[in-house]
Image (cartoon, rainbow, N blue to C red; front, side, top):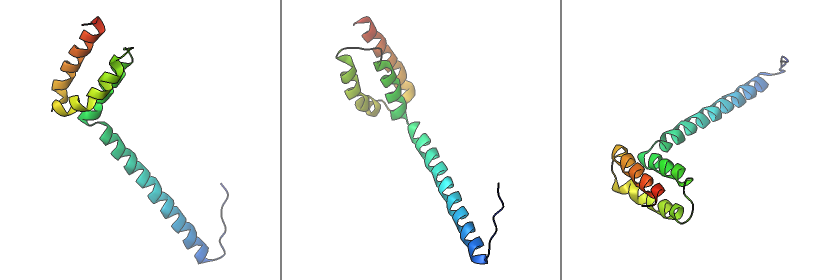
Length: 98
């Protein structure tokens, strides 16, 4: 890396201000990324992800119906631990055609 030469203190102050702003932007990007990651681990998103990944196994008219039911299932079932066995049981019945 080439050493910079400054002819005045104003140039040094300007360079330091640019570096401070770049540091703050990087920090805010990191905070935003962490916030989005936390939001993706909500019970509603976890249940939606499980159902969404199981939709790939279905073909025909079940996919859109299940997609419509996702918000209602997430609201009706207060705990994910109760929702996952219910959903897996329901999906296993659909695979067998019941």
